[in-house]
Structures are given as C-alpha cells and as structure tokens.
Image (cartoon, rainbow, N blue to C red):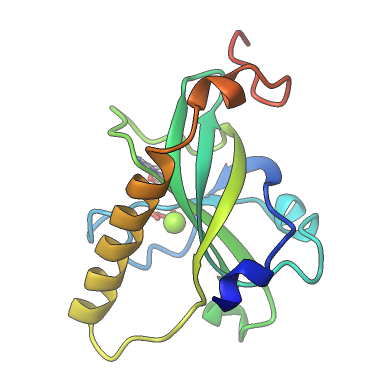
Length: 153
Ligand code: ADP
Ligand code: MG
C-alpha cells in the first residue's frame, strides 16, 4: 500500500491554538484546533498533506486520541498550509490560545475535495473510525511517559 512509503512518522508537533475561518467544523460536529503559523512553518517542507491519526494534549491536560489534517488553505489561495487537529474527546469549553502538543502516528489518506457536504461528512466519520481502530492498538502509557507530553505541567 502506497501509504507505507511515509516513513517520517511518528512526527511530533506543538503550537498555539488559533482561530480558523469557521469553515463549519464545529457545526459539523467536528471542531478542529488550528495550529499557529509558526508551528505550521516548522513542519518539514516535504511532510505530505493528508489526514493522520495520533495523540494530542491541550495545555497540561490528559492525552487524547486525535485526527489531524495537513493541507492548503483556500482562504490564502492555497499558498498557506494549515494544520488542524480534531481531538476525540468532549471538552467543556473552547481552548483557543492554549498550547497543544501532538504526535502524528499514522497516515490515513490524502486530501481530496468532495462533491457534497454529505460525502465530506462520511469521509470524516470514516477517518475517525479508522483512527479509533488504529489507536486502540497503541499503548498510551508509552506516550504519556514521554518528556514531550508534560503531563504534570
Ligand atoms: P476554527 O475555524 O476557529 O478553527 P472550529 O469550528 O474548527 O473553528 O472549532 C475549533 C475550536 O473548537 C478549537 O480551537 C477549540 O477551541 C474548540 N474545540 C472544542 N472541542 C474540540 C475538540 N474535541 N477538538 C478540537 N477543537 C475543539
Ligand atoms: Mg478549525
């Protein structure tokens, strides 16, 4: 399978949660925490666009499973990359301006455009279900113990 060609994983990334362009993530039940420009610029130039699964931590909170997209932002005429993380956890409030640390562990699919909102939502559901399946096999403790995730603040 061609996805196995991506051997730069796991990839660790951290940044500050900034406002996106309200493309309806939250309305679709899929809010994405957008990383700040500096974090995005630190991605290796050849890091492939697409959808990934991994783990993320907001501030000094717990480690959660996540789905991350790396892509080109149409609002900037596709000249600016964005990194967006949907955390598979229900938060009681928004966390803009918080520090977020994440590790991308596996590649799910390339970016694509969808003919309809229904198709997009179906793809998101499939991404999440694949991420849950893959992430159920990993040992979270192994990652919680890493210095990168500062579980105690
Ligand atoms: P924006 O366009 O500003 O990124 P979104 O609709 O994508 O707006 O919502 C993202 C925001 O929702 C995040 O920045 C965060 O503060 C909040 N949020 C709440 N729950 C989650 C979650 N489970 N995963 C990601 N972000 C979440
Ligand atoms: Mg967003």
